[in-house]
Length: 281
Length: 227
Image 1 (cartoon, rainbow over the protein chains, first blue to last red):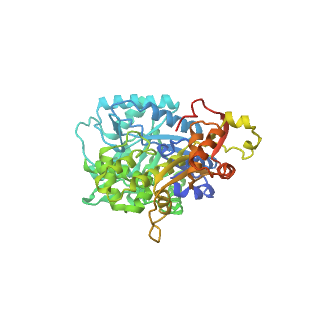
Image 2 (image 1 turned 90 degrees about the horizontal axis):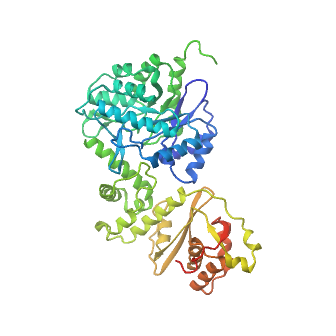
């Protein structure tokens, strides 16, 4: 990693060749490791070539850390293999469950934030960190429905998880905005309540109103540019906690590489504005 | 919880649509997504990585009632799957094309050609492999005629590109024998048994040049009677 936290973008197969030749300074890339869990071939070859020039972050969706069962040993081993080969500067995962009784769901389901759940997730995160031999970051989910059974707020839950397991936090500002809108809480108050020292990365992404319910239900689509309201929250967050590696996250409706870099430059500007005054270099 | 269910199903259908892209080209996005939704309901993903999701989708399609009018679809789906299997297979260096020329007649009896991990071979009724190739990029501009007989295809990586090549039944027999560890001589016998007019140098040279083989190794016992 470079001497200061910078902004990166999601790496998509349709952008491989531009990602390899871009002259953007201090750029880094993030991929879902699940898309690279193959034996060989072009994907791994591209990732290796791009990794030779830019730092890489692995953002997993498959460890299912909030599930009532241990993370799959086979999946953890595959993740470790990728981490050993590509030496990512960050490994992150979602706070969600996506696996039950051997069936894997490629989306991130909610769970009640109980003491019991916290114990279980601390165990799962610790297990993952033990196998990987390093600290991982855990991301806040986007919420669509109010569940019963919560015993603590999400920032409180994430803070406790970080304190007990030693993991860091990945704050997805878009998820906070979407959840606050859908469940009717203050996004600003939420962000203020997250312990600054635990935050190791920030995600910025786009969302869209639900087809039927409109703006009452925002969907975390990762298919649009970052919304103005999310940029505003991001500025407030960086102002409070200082610059952190920031990702422009895109998974759907993939735009031109230059469009992603354009959004990335906005984030770079905000990070530069809040560099500590006495920083070296 | 409908919003969660919707995104779950959509994600799995997206994976199937990109895996079986030639099927999508042939039946259209709407038909494919409707069929895929039924499949996803019955066969949800069982691993966190979806790179291999849909391995049994071709077989499932052959029993899918609404696909009755398009009996060639399972073969097209299978070819799409083989393409991705070749794409994700392990890397390996190709055999030096000169390596065979130094072998003695006795060596040829005891030594086999090992296939590159990306090599997939298959035989199909009619000219379905050509039909698949014609629809790989986009629907062809003219009507595609279905021919009698069978057709063989080799799908393998050449460098970083996956290529599909129609091969003769003799080449298919040769490669099938190599796949189970037969000696070069036994593989050659299989090719000639399939087509007495096959010319072995003409058969092997393009395979060597294409990088289909990785190394020479002792023939596996029992491979003489396999396949």
